[in-house]
Length: 129
Image (cartoon, rainbow, N blue to C red; front, top):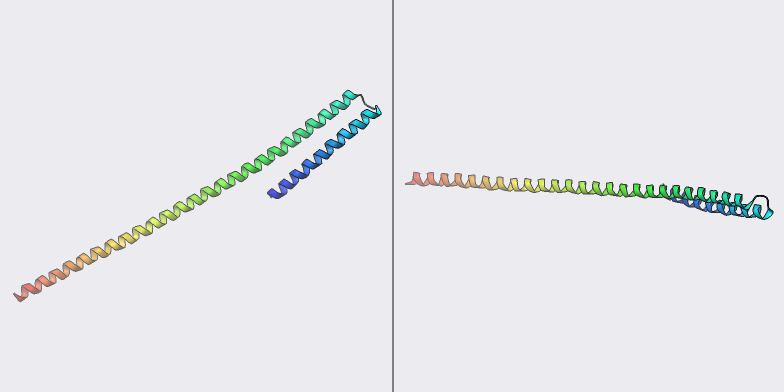
């Protein structure tokens, strides 16, 4: 899409240059032939320059708009990447917490088993005495 826009922009720019050169050539020929007074020719040339300048400004504004849209798209993509990275960090934190919980449960279970074994041994010793 951008390529097409830039090609169209370049094509329009070259066409406007050719049109302006043609207008100047016609104006010079008309003046040389004495058909129109030089003042009218100068006014016509000035008007052509104003129109061409306005058209060029319109093209430039469109180019700026395309660049701004591209920048906005890149900013949005960066924001989405940052959000995805944050989501992955949250998931990693949850996995670490789950691993810590499993480890804590294993330690608690081992403590209970040790206490039960100590109780059984104490009872066995008491029965022997």
